[in-house]
Image (cartoon, rainbow over all chains, first blue to last red; front, side, top):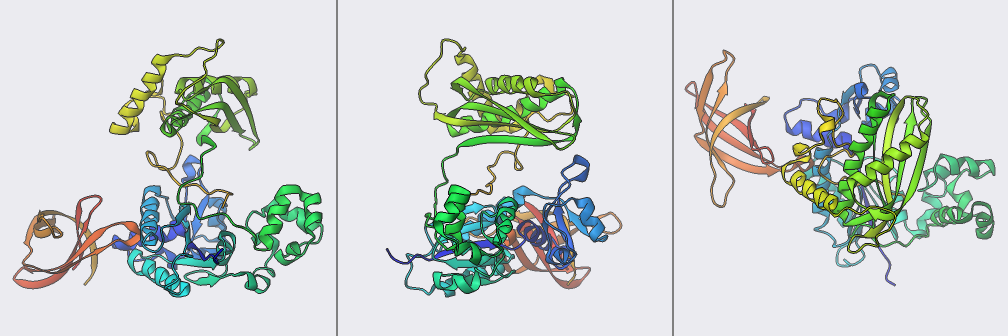
Length: 414
Length: 87
């Protein structure tokens, strides 16, 4: 097979850059990227964490994911701006559109990361193209990116992470030893804090040390996941650049409530609002799911969950809600809850269905769901809502950051 | 020129093939009164798509208080809003 050339394009402090550029376009005098600033959630709604930080904010030791409260203690004159996911989608789409001019194989890996297969264009040097793309994005779209180039997606992704911002890096097989092996082991894709602790315990601190281990040894110790990271450490990875998304295996929505919910009635309302969203999404996929699960996080930040397999697959909001309610009632201990989530998995196509003697199947309900979806798609999500939400203070449909648009989520699959 | 980015009310001419052409707009001045400005000439127009947000920037010329002035207008395509960008 011909040698592959894969690009990984990574936007530098994505949310923050996009917000900064948007503000400059609207006449702002200050570039958020030049001052200590963060994009953060609303503290009063208990979404108060740092979503993105500027490079000056990084110098104060502010971390992505920490609370705004602690970020403000590290830097008292920090500028905090709220997130706007619709704007980010627009910026991300504009980047994808630009990249599609260079290759037919473009995979959006997350909102700010894109893989592109450039193996098929041998007329132009790939480095020239990378610099051209980087400059065009900066000139036309106003933000900076890092581009990593490698023989596969893993090495391209590792390369784009080297030195930021606004750079192009390569990482081919002969460069692994110098460029990747000296790095600490948790810099490797898929090595999180837990794996890091396990590896450190046995004296493995760099990616090189992991790579040099015996294959059989790592398999007998960490089994299949161990083998995967060992292969990654050796630069072995060969997934294609997918321009169609992977099949969806489960759908779930969750919400952190703005106050602790301590009664059954309100809890049921949150579950219903989430079930509405989950139901609409499953129906939109033209699938039915069989396993419903509910997970809760209480005021002590302890999480637990419960799931149930139905005897017939469903995509009905009411069935999802009734099951979620049952699951909730079975596990809830009566303590205040701060986070609810509802998800559905084990999908079947909804073209035909095996009915069950033991469970009701209501055709009218299916038609009703379909009609409601149609109305909501045409006139907006709040055009038709359940009356129990009226004057309740609970939003009738909860879940997702961009209402009415699919937001690309991060995945552990390359 | 100073950045103003003030929303304005606009009468524009939408053509078949080119960008919309600004003709006349009104703006609320410091005494809270409407001031109407006629756009005498569009020197150039260019589209920008910073952060994916499409806007058309116009460099224009008008006579304001008997003085010829050059300034910039912006049209945001997604929201259909006009702004006095710089003067």
